[in-house]
Structures are given as structure tokens and as C-alpha cells.
Amino acid sequence: MNEPQEAQAPGFDPEQPLIGHEMLTAALAQSMSGGRVAHGWLLTGPAGTGKGLMARLAAAWMLAEQRDAHAGLDLGGEAGFALDRDDPGTGLVMRSVHPDLMIVEPDIEDNKSGQIKLAQIRKLLSFMGRKPARDGWRVAIIDSMDDVNRNGANALLKLLEEPPAKTILFLTASRPGRLPSTIRSRCRVVRITAPDSHACGQILHDRLAAGGMPHDDLARLADGAPGRALQLAESGAADCYMAVCSLLATPTPDQSALSAV
Image 1 (cartoon, rainbow, N blue to C red):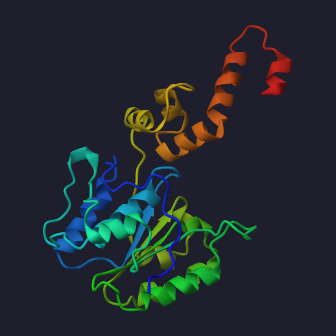
Image 2 (spheres, one colour):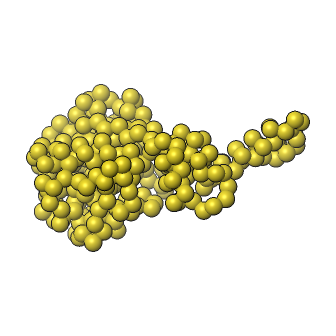
Image 3 (cartoon, helix red, strand yellow):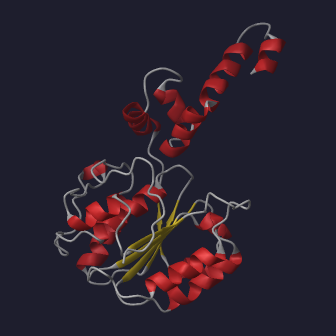
């Protein structure tokens, strides 16, 4: 019976190239080919740099059923890597119905704190303790550890200290310094860096309609973090920023117009 899955990340496409994430893909390929895959991976970096998406893509690669385990990843230079959407395992991940993948995020309903609850962590521990349903890996993602309180982090320790065979746990964190050192020390840490403003602008060009703030300006405003830039654009914050800048650029700013903004 399939495990219940959390909703996948919006826009999840395994054939969409990622920029600036080669450190994780190379580390996964190297560890897989060497037969010593770390059970815990901590993906760090600024908010909006694609850590959650990268974890999902890594999970799709780990759960692919027609991949040569010794072939490594096709990194494609700066383009990151792509997966075959026709692979049975990858297809299940894309549809968020893979029985050997659990994605843990904050519950949207009845959750005033916005945190990942201890009950969710306990459910993950139970999930990881079972044998894989499709004779491969058992994979879990916590996106993100910024939303896990100390009780939840402590509950993860036993899993990281004594991981079951053929299990892998991907954690994301924008503020890894706030995590208990016991969590950090038991994970392989990979920093996901933001692409430069030009590369971020290219991503925005593919994702946003024309109009509004120029994509290169939006990329600079978001410090090169595509996720943050998309949030600024979709929330209307970027348009508000442009309006304020335009008003302040006049010799005598219109105070009523500024108040309206």
C-alpha cells in the first residue's frame, strides 16, 4: 500500500536543468560509484536557491529503476543534470506517489506555528524503518529543518546514528547554524549557492511572463536566488518596489502617492 505523500514542489520537472548545484550531483555520483552513500545529506544555502527542488531531483535519481548505478550522473557542465521522465521510479516521484519516498513539510491546515510537528517526524521514523516496497532505496526529505523545533531534531538523532540499510535522508536548511551540532556532524553537508544574477535572470525569463520588473533587475534584487525572485514577482512586492523607486526618483516625491503604495 502506498504511503501518503506530501505535495510536490510547484514546477517540479526532472528534465529542467538546474544551475549551480553541481556539488551535490557530483557528490552523489561519487558516493554511489564508490559504494559508500552517506545516509544523511544536509543541503544548506540562502533561501530561494532551490534546495528543496534539488533534494527532490536527487530523490528521483536515487529511486530511478533503469539507471546504471555505476554510470554516475550526466552533469552536463553548468546545466546540472536531467532525469528520464519515462523511468518507472522517476515517474512515481513526479506524481508524488512513490511508495519509498516521503516528503515532510509544514502542514498547511491547523498549524498556527508553521512548524513541522513532532508527530510528522515520528511518522517519518516509522516510514524509514520499513523495507523498501520496490526493492530499491527508502528516501525521505525534510524541507526544511528551519521549521523543525529542537524536540523534532532530537527525534531524528537515532535515525542518523543508526540508519537502516538502503535509506537516505535529505535535509534542507537556510540557517544551518541553528541546528544542533549533533545533526550537522552526522550529515554530509553540501552548500547550494545562488547562481549569478545573469543566470538567475535566464531562469526568470523562462518562468515569468513579460512585463513588470526587468528580469535582470529582479534577479539582483533577490541576490540571485530564483525562488526568492519568483516570490517577489508573484506577490507583487517587486512591482511595489519599482513604484516606490520611481516616486523617490522625482525631485519632489508625491507623499500621497507614496502613502498609497
